[in-house]
Image (cartoon, rainbow, N blue to C red; front, side):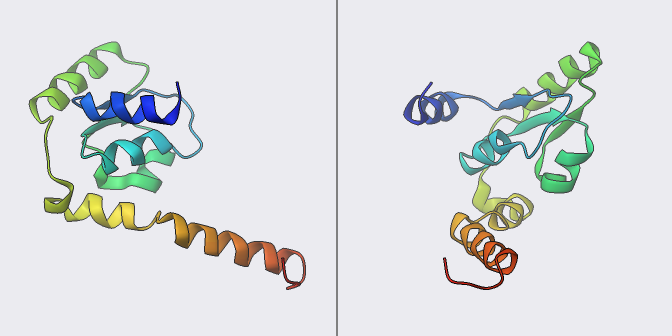
Length: 117
């Protein structure tokens, strides 16, 4: 699936379900939030650390009943406005791509002894 298809599918979705056992960053969560979609995700430390209260429903990915209950909750609250949700907007503002690129450049410069790239 290319990016255009991914964004099209996400635009038509009622929410995102990311029941992962282990995750590095959970980029699909950020993408769903940017599209104004509610999110159900695994109750794992990385999601709490990165997204905190921006995730609408946390579930145990090992418990099918908990996941089913989470889906019900998500579908009951499947619309929201990012502009009206300051928690989600604040969390997403931390991951502004130009800011991330600038931080990455700064890190690279420190690692190579401040020589120009």
